[in-house]
Image 1 (tube, rainbow, N blue to C red):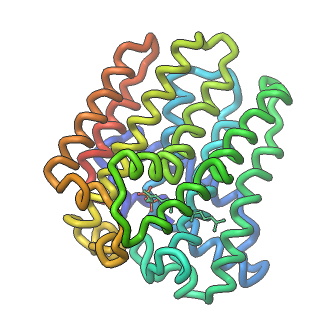
Image 2 (image 1 turned 135 degrees about the horizontal axis):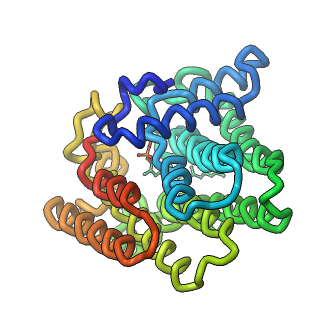
Length: 305
Ligand code: GRG
């Protein structure tokens, strides 16, 4: 667990550290007791560790920016839900039938620590748990319609029109030449849709949010998600294994198309910076306090983890 922030990469941004305490508490409270079963142990092992918690941070920062009129408990459950979906995807992504990675977040991946069946089942358990906790939200300022919308957004992001389709295309593309556009599409589905759901779910809490502002926030999320993924690919080549918590060059070992393999490292960094600048320009034009979202966006392209 990283609530002590020792391994947290964003120590420089104090508001992220403050949010992190809330996020870790919300995630821990959402999990079944560790002692319940082998699967529970595997869930705790895979969820309470050195994740950067980018998705829940986005939920909290969006809620602050839009000053949404729901309880902080509601926001915390939404944040936990976004992170749980992400954690489930990482467990399955590491399986031998997928990317076959032995390490994740600086320790053995779930199937290596436990076994393959346990890792499949832990992932299978975390995904519905992420949606179940949204159904438990009790908030007089949240209508049933809004709650259903939030559940719909998170379910869609991880389903056949989101993460699963992205992962399937990603696996199919191994060893093949694909275009930059095809790679963008894979990552939009695989990574971007969940990031977008984190942003859109908060937009959906604000009834009077002008359509144009919602569109701007979604454009921001798309650019943020793509810049984040490009940086992820760059770190797979240039990162320090001890800092990123897994071996580098995994994309080239699997003959996976990546931004550095298609356009080169320098152009990848430039593209991530350009997308980040476009995201910042969208945020600065909006009539809300987006300063912390701006700092987070800057950081995702500068990060070394
Ligand atoms: C098996 C039904 C089924 C579905 C699988 C595995 C999967 C669906 C989708 C994979 C999606 C995936 C792994 C996306 C990961 C993209 C990515 C950038 C991961 C790293 O995210 P960070 O940097 O990691 O936020 P931390 O560890 O900080 O949370």
